[in-house]
Image 1 (tube, rainbow, N blue to C red):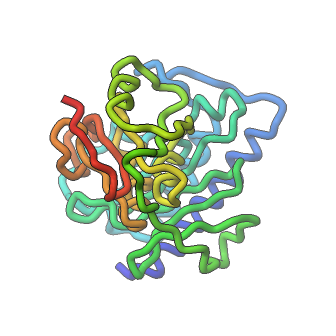
Image 2 (spheres, rainbow, N blue to C red):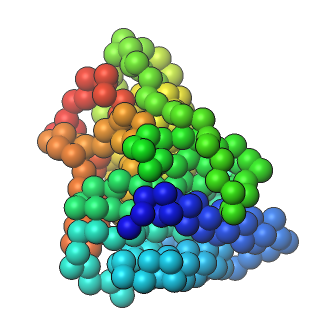
Length: 266
């Protein structure tokens, strides 16, 4: 699979899905339903899912495609696959906050090696490069013309004054206790996979997640952060987070710049 052509296609599909999401987001009203796990789903989730999944299957007919909205149909038996969250941060979308993203990643041998994270309401797009780095593009975006973007990399962390980013919607006493183990200069909240990207750009040092996530929530942001020089490890034992797990459910994890002295959660 040609890496350059893959990224052109992932980026194009993310932008197309983002355009449809924003059409719905900026409309007068949209329907919100509850899935079997009580999480919300909207017509924007479903429209973006159709754009991306149909596009990936047309462009890469031999590749496995896993998406959040179609996850119940997947019986994954390979370690190389596309994984998609067509609208990450549906709660942010429903509340008309801008911290939602389109996430598309390519996983090879259990590791996310290519990814696009597009935040259409914020006009920010993060992606890996075929050469192995990570860049941020700023809008307006043309799905048919890929700009070079601005290279991004993690910051040189000061363990006596760390910058922490955490979820807006999933704070807990356990998380607050864990953050309290570090010398924190500043803490900010962000939604969706943007938290990975803030570490990737040096706007934060560490993103701890001590709550439930699925692989489609994390793979694209994980790919961008790893390409920017960061790491994503299991919170319990600090081993690298892997993909292609049964049920696609993640353990608790810590995303961080390599200079951070990370402590396990247990």
